[in-house]
Length: 102
Image 1: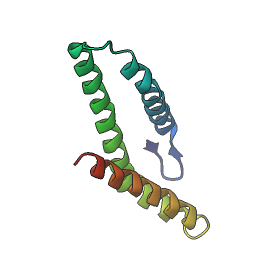
Image 2 (image 1 turned 45 degrees about the vertical axis):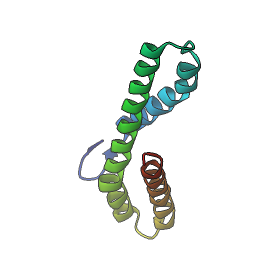
Image 3 (image 1 turned 90 degrees about the vertical axis):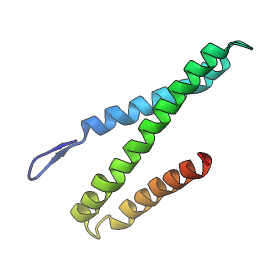
């Protein structure tokens, strides 16, 4: 995300979100495509899924630290409630991931 004093270019956020949606959308097919007993392929797929899941976690952590506070500051009370709801959803995803990784 690049920014000038008055504007923020969020195109890279669009690209990142599209990439995560695409890759997680492909995940079921990757899992179903592993032949019974193919341990090597199952490890490759598992490693890849762990990689994109970890990437998503780091992406959401970066949003929590850098995006939500700045966005809330910029919109003030005009759309503050919407930003707080979006931030809460992000927190729910983070907590859900932590629970699943135990």
